[in-house]
Length: 99
Image 1 (spheres, rainbow, N blue to C red):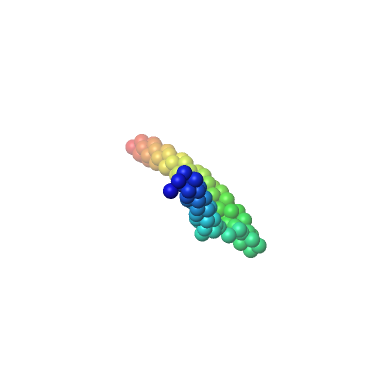
Image 2 (image 1 turned 135 degrees about the vertical axis):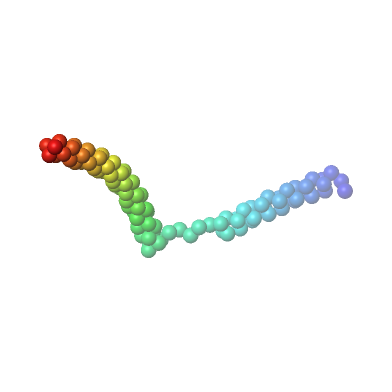
């Protein structure tokens, strides 16, 4: 095998490798391609996006309401303690007046 035959063989092998790589990339692209959303699918995706946004807003509002509820419970506990103190003071005053 002389020099020109070797050059031709290497060139043919490189061309075949490039062609094989291109074909494999094309096949991989076809296998991994996602279909484009059209018509009803596009509408469903838009609706899904808006529903997810509404869900996030509802979760945020729920967190706010839970925080308000916890604060209200703390205030109610304080008011109950104060009411009990007032009752105890009233009972003590009534017992002093009776005695």
